[in-house]
Length: 209
Image (cartoon, rainbow, N blue to C red; front, side):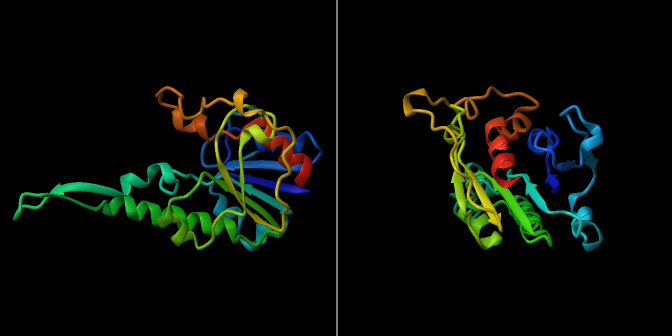
């Protein structure tokens, strides 16, 4: 198959499909760090979703930014200010943040409803405002520990013409770890936290390829 992995610079998913013999390409606005620039399209994924290009693609797996959509960031949609009349503190919407959230949801929908036969869009659990904007919730919720990796990181999958992933190896509860959320602060923390676990990429390639 010809496969596009949208919003992926790490090439973890791309390389998993390449290992199975598929013509897979990662696509991101930044250069790839996966070591195979010949398999990377640096540019706007929305350009590739135009009919003249998307008609050649059999499967797209997309990892759109979750900064403004995920449940862990919902508190930042609001800010506190002082009412100059009553001098009381009140909570009001952060207009810029809401604008970014709506823009993120619109980008998510463009990927989800792209003119490609098979699509999987992954994102962490969304807050209710993002779900309202997107209009549909995930079809499957997966964890790394269902696929042989001991980490916990709930990830939703929005699926079009693809079956739910079947767990490959359940890690016992007492052996599970939480390194993602405990990752120390750094300039690249967000990027590191967003990389797809190899075991999940392998399951995608095995089961969807």
